[in-house]
Amino acid sequence: MKILADANILYSALLYPEGASAQALFYISENCELVISDFNISELREVVERSLPEHLPDIEVFLAELSYEQVIAPVSP
Image (cartoon, rainbow, N blue to C red; front, top):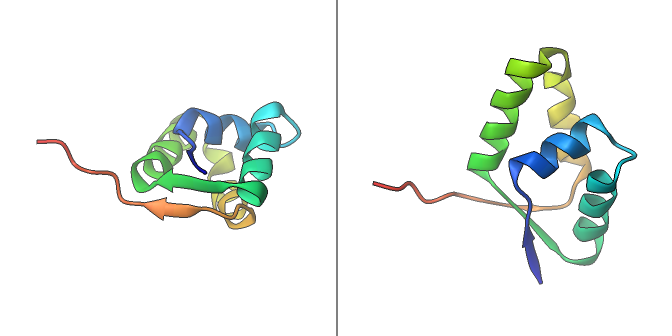
């Protein structure tokens, strides 16, 4: 089963590594197929840069710890 994580879940998991969102993401990445779109990763970076720029370096570490498939989001006309 493939499960897509959106930017809100990623943001919550990044800020609260012991929280439910982080636990769910790591469970999914170990037991299912976690999918994250390039758009959601970009959105995560934009939100963190705007709200908590000191956490920008944490994004790369966080994503490196997850096992996921990155997909290209289609561009709407």
